[in-house]
Image (cartoon, rainbow, N blue to C red; front, side, top):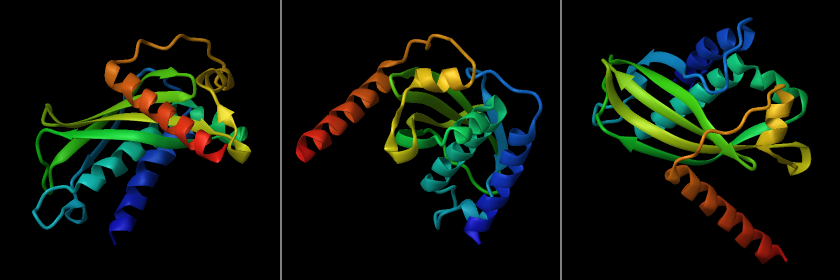
Length: 184
């Protein structure tokens, strides 16, 4: 049953975002509102850590649907892949607490696209996530952020990325270089 409540939440978020006639800006804050359900809790009575990641996925789908990115990327056979996510928890949430997830693209570099997700309840920051994603094309072709922007008909510069994002990107690049060296 836990999978079903995620499926219904996905439909509740995705369908209005995907079929909305009004598109939002890439750098806008995109909000998903929800509440902690009984199936979201662990035996200790608070929302499980993994459920936060599930909500960041919903935030990404909401973002992609509302900005038009999903249609543009699917047309080209591009798939988003989360490569890094770092969650920080400040408070816990319990059933039936209401909350919202605020998702915002904060910038990009090369093929990496960076997002921030903030969980708020009653005006208080509950948790935040720093996420680095990329797009992959058919046969694992590299898709740069510039290619993604071009697909959306945009030509904008990335806001300056914070050091945490730059460190995550450097780590991902170092690991990719290491894997490539092993194959050679």
